[in-house]
Image 1 (cartoon, rainbow, N blue to C red):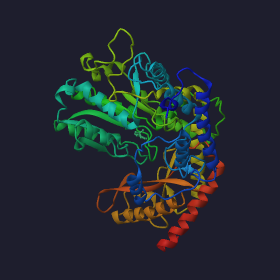
Image 2: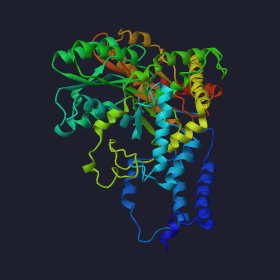
Image 3: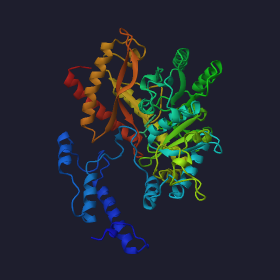
Amino acid sequence: MNYKELFQSEDGNVEQRQKFSAQIQKILQAMDDLKNPNQTILGESAEKSPAFYQHLMETAQVEEKGQALDNVVDELIQLLDGHPYHTHNYVTNVLPMASIPGLLGMLTNMLINGNNLWDVYGPAAAESEVKVISMMSKLVGYDETKSFGYTTWGGQGAVFSGLRLAIAKQFPNAKEEGVPNNLYCFASENAHYSLLKSIEAVGIGSNHLVRVKACADHSMDLEDLNMQMRAVIRQGGIPVYVVATTGTTDSFGIDDVAGVKAITTALEKEFTLKPIHIHADSALGGFYSFFNDYDFDTNPLDFEAPVTAALLQIRERMQHIHLADSLCFDFQKLGQTPYLTSLFLVKDGSSLGLLDLEDFDTPYVGNRGYGSYHTGYTLECSRMGSSIAIYAALRAFGKENYQALLANYVRVNLQFREQLAAQVPAVEVVNPLNIGPVTAIRYYGNNTTWAQEVAGQATAAQIEAVNATNSAWFELLGAQREDVFFGDTTRVCTVLAQDTKQFIPVAAAKLFTISPYTEVTHIPHFIEVLQQTIAQLEVQHEVHA
Ligand SMILES: *Cc1c(COP(=O)(O)O)cnc(C)c1O
């Protein structure tokens, strides 16, 4: 065995390259053979039971001799079989198909295997990172000469990084001394659970996460935010961090960042507080900033009137995210690049200095006469150069392709809602005021209605009964997911029960458009599947519509 054969060539010889590219070709070919545009998986599915994983655990081991590369690639190809694939019926959640420029960027990065920790080790990634930070800063309206950022571990990592900054800005010594025990963070009840995990991890404690009520449009209720922040301050608490979600994951509710900023500014003044850090969790929705400077009057991409109206409605809220101190773009979501390609942006880049390590603590990187880009402020040490994939996607798509793609998600959702209302009366849209890539739908049969639930007129028992029926519906939708892969959520929002005055989670199924191949023409089949599963549900439950 010659282990050198397992590597790319040292000298660029043709044979070694051809062997490598033949294996890649083989994988691509096998994948294409497994594709079927009318199902949401590659090849054949197999149910993965707990016993399946038990068997893997018992049998897997490192063997004495390595396998021939050909056999290894055959095994890789077997992994593709039954894997979900983002065909036009793949409408489950924000799980994108990785675009070709994204893949090529990632591949380039993998071939050179640079380390984004330091430009001496990863110059390509450092260069791309600086470029994409500037590109996205300009897009949202940050001053690119002052802003900064880095790629990190998901939207989750961005929420966490924002919190680290929030604490460091008010308590620069907290790094050494630990965090005070009276800090508080605020987010909408519809925010992603990223903040919950972050608060636990930094030691603030999840009891200090204040969940703000949401309005009927699923955005944060600013009156409640104001009230809750005042209550915390009156009791001696210090507000450090407000997360404004601009595009909630289940319903595309967009928090009013300008409104949040007005509240924190007023409170800072009234109570002489240090600046409260606002993070716009734009992981999902931030991409609609591509319409910030779209000329809706001349409408160069010829969007239909309803689509234009919807995009304008999104822009109304999204254009203010630059008021936040930090924000995020999950390129592995609407940016259509491979995992993980999340970009964390900070309005005042110099504040990252508060998180930086001392030279003494980083003996083998940075602080040399050579190299001038060392990311000592990130939580990661070694970092993948995911900015290269982001850069490639931004270059290849340009604003126009993103605009066309993102507008099509809106178009499909608008049409879907129209056809649903006409043809599936037992189901209602529970995010009717929000338009974007997602529609959350809830089965009511002829019982309660969404209008009653959202107005606080349904009893706890009624809401819970509807939830139970929807859970049964999710099972039926899940069972046919190789045809149309819908999503579902056990808590798209909460509603107030009329009798108990308690907030109760609302379960809903979801249509989340994320495949570039999903078009308006596919909607009738979505509707058909909904009707079929509802018919099954009604037989099962003997609820006759
Ligand atoms: C997806 C999402 C996150 C988490 O992002 P990951 O990349 O999965 O870590 C956080 N916030 C929002 C609003 C999201 O949509």
